[in-house]
Amino acid sequence: MKKIDEEALAQAYDRALALEKSGDLDAAARAYAEVLALDPDDHGGAAVRLASMGRGETPEKAPDAYVTTLFDQHAEVFEDVLVEQLGYAVPVLVRQRLQTLGLGPFKRMLDLGCGTGLTGGTLRDMVEDLTGIDLSENMVEIAHEKDLYETLYVAEAVDFLDDNDEEPFDLITATDVLPYLGALEPLFFGAADNLVPGGLFIFSSETLSADTFAGRGFMVGPHQRFAHAEDYVRNRLDATGFDLVEIADITVRMEDGEPTPGHLVVARRRGDA
Image (cartoon, rainbow, N blue to C red; front, side):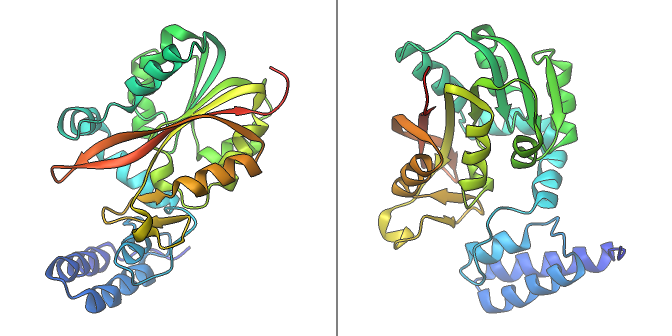
């Protein structure tokens, strides 16, 4: 395994960011290519930034090393930044929709991308047994300290869904997971395989205008997060064994003072409830 030259990598990444900020996107793309050559695992998310600038192919997902590094670094301030500064309230919206639709309580819930436990804590009283999954060990440690979950794993969501052979769940949530995934089939198939017939899959996504998508199902948006077209989400759910219960327009968070549009989706695995 090749050892990373941390100093050279930091210099290349700083140079790429400066060029991107200056508007010289061609030079920035060359600098990000140098970053990837130094760090093929892409801890800094160069591939995502290239796609965001329109200077690289859209990856199927954000690199695991990037997601892990991002959230490990921000775990201690995560809730303050996301909730207090960015106005993130998706877990509360999930609870409200479940109550409005008359759904629950639930026996077993899987919280994909559980982070520090925002969604788990919001739904804790509606669930008998709660399992949380996150790539970031630092985030999982904070969630563990809250004593919300019966079980916690440090794992990538799709890998966990593929490997899990425990009793299926009757509720799976994925709040703020899709912004780090492009193609949704692996996640949706994995969720279907881990739900009881009639089980619920609830998730949030970010979106952009139809003109911006230009026929694409997903793309990396201006803030290096994946956005998904509504038709793409609907089609992938149908193809992976789900019936759509509800898809609602929401504001996911604020970014640079502007609302980030998205969807809150409630889907049911086909089969007898």
